[in-house]
Length: 123
Ligand SMILES: [Zn+2]
Ligand SMILES: [Zn+2]
Image 1: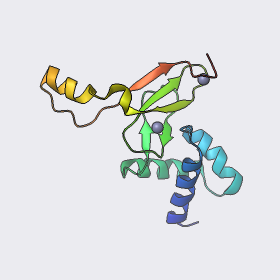
Image 2 (image 1 turned 180 degrees about the vertical axis):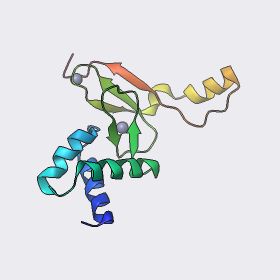
Image 3 (image 1 turned 90 degrees about the vertical axis):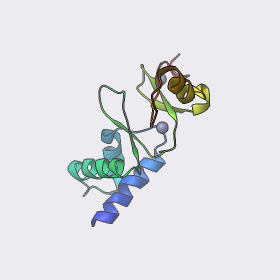
Image 4 (image 1 turned 60 degrees about the vertical axis):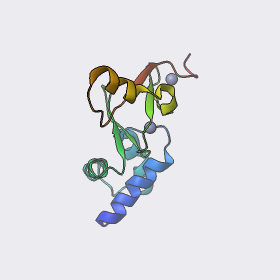
């Protein structure tokens, strides 16, 4: 399998999995159709895609990194019971950047907000 095909397989698996899969989860999905893709290949592709800004690595998770095909600004909610990661619309904190700049005098280039708690199913 050539490099661009590998990349396509990784991106497709990520796009079909809306709940921000971990690298391990992606690996098990890809294995079903493409057993020839090794774990090393997958990890290399994930980090290259993240570096290129095509996908996003979600920080704030202690155990294993989750990946996101949605690179538009949005926040995340991590369920502390089932470990799933959900998207949260930025509208929940619309003024956070302007308020931060106003209160600190800093110039904000980027920000991330991670909420933690119990998802609807786990409550
Ligand atoms: Zn949950
Ligand atoms: Zn997301």
